[in-house]
Image (cartoon, rainbow, N blue to C red; front, side, top):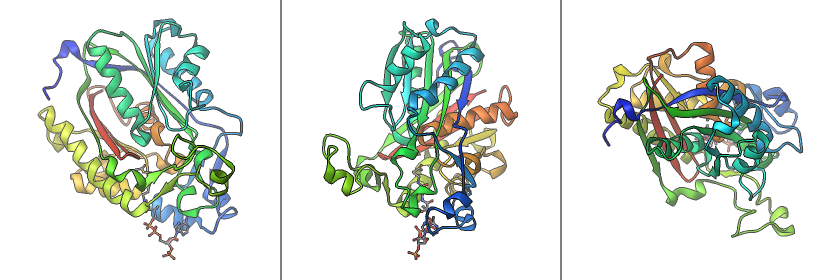
Length: 331
Ligand code: ACO
């Protein structure tokens, strides 16, 4: 794929983030399941995560992030003509969380849909928005990654419940004069779908007394296999986007990976040949927030000065599906 010419570049002109107030620490988890702060830190790097109060919808979490991103972009909700929400924990099966968010924002001119790519949701949504913006079909896209994954976690299963947290990240995308998206990559492997999935609540195993009794509405994961594939696919994808734009590893200023856990991130960076000093990590404070994680990390990287104007930044994601993808940005 040829990198886009500078007149067709799509960039990020506003960012936002929102997490629930309630903090669940590893010490709190010690009281819920047979685990320890030391085990969780050693295996995952996670110290705490944020958890929504009952009755909160993913759109509620997304709304403040979207408002902040629009404010930073200097746009009004009516200026937005496309809203994509990357999520696997939507408010409802339908309508889409993007439609619920549109109404709350008053973004009446926007076409809206959700995008299901699990933890790759925000990266896939940004790449999708880029296509519409590049053709000129839409001018201003609001892309959100938002999840209340805590409602789909089995809080009696110590092998998964320690890993996840709730959160939302948002960005506004449009054509830019400088910087922007230089290269993208997306991939999928449906043959590995059952390594990470929620079996119940869809058309195949609809909700019933039996599905609840069998705990089919909770996330199931083969952690060891997911670990290996996440490391390999993310390392390959990050290198792919750099190569597409004619760059090597030395040209990379900052890698912003999906924040699944520190060991995956370290192993992936090592395999790709990227020093950890160039890798942005905030998983210790939020756990794995699935589709929200890349945009939350990008937001914090920008806020903290970890990325500066002109830096070459790679966002890389991996999630259920399996799905994976990357974006090379000039910040
Ligand atoms: N506390 C204490 N012990 C635990 C816990 C816990 N929370 N969870 C599992 N254990 C035990 C297991 O029961 C097992 O005990 P056993 O040896 O007596 O059977 C032992 O710890 C080792 O278990 P493993 O699963 O082999 O532990 P591992 O070192 O592989 O770490 C982990 C598990 C952290 C889940 C790891 O496999 C992993 O990081 N996988 C990737 C999963 C992930 O991040 N998924 C997110 C979704 S995909 C994505 O976002 C990329």
